[in-house]
Image (tube, rainbow, N blue to C red; front, side):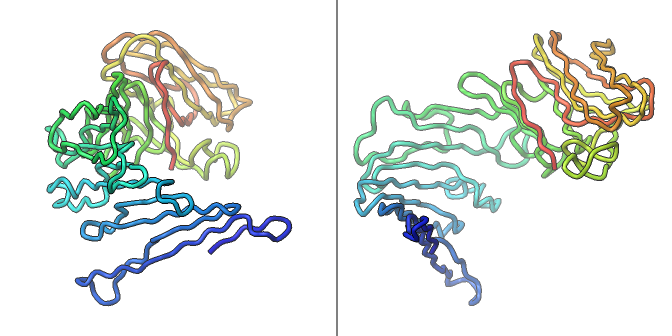
Length: 360
């Protein structure tokens, strides 16, 4: 139990958590699960309660979360969770027990109450993935307010649902057994950029551009699809900018991409959307002499940036925006003269797209 007192020593807020211990009869004697059964909060005399039930026959994860204010059950709601392993045999056989397939919310509770919100995801096999993946995501959007006693109902095997369900997202591309591209109901693509190997780290995401329509490279690794990893080289530094400044430190991470007169960096937009695109990166030179960084597309120099020698060891932001053609575009970053330059957070994407980049 936790209590918060005001300046006069009066309890203004308290939080009480009740645990339960679950033992499965088939488990060894000393194996058990301690878990939260109930949480009660009191704020200035108003009591709110959360009760959690678990799906012990499947995965021991929460199956029902009931919330109410005061002692009146009508002032509350219940959220129920459906797991993919409970509706798809192939998910259960693969021991993928924790992945959620749906949730739905009812007021004041699901037994005899009213269904007011729900989201469901279908899983299945695709021709390019060796394991089952998420196929699409649907939301519950009835034309009229559901009636009392309405129940959650979804066809897990069909790509067509009743009129109360609207498809929010369809997944269109997969890599290394994971969904990496999706299209929403407005036709807008989104993509996830992973390290190019099984169980690779997530390196970035893009909204309004699909796989092959944008390029991201944080600098943590060269092993990323559509970048020439054979010609790419990383350098390990002493830390990022929170650890120090100067040529021994990166900006966002202790790992950066290195280019030099003998080492260029190339990446390929396999399906450029055409139109306005934007390039940006963070650059650090190590020589106390002015150095040029060249930016080219399909072998034609598009832009260059001069980093003053007085800024050696400092990280400088460079960017370019202009119109590009559709189709395949090969991006090249080069340093014709000098010792080396380091690069982090490299992005080349449509001007109307947004992106995030992750660092380890």
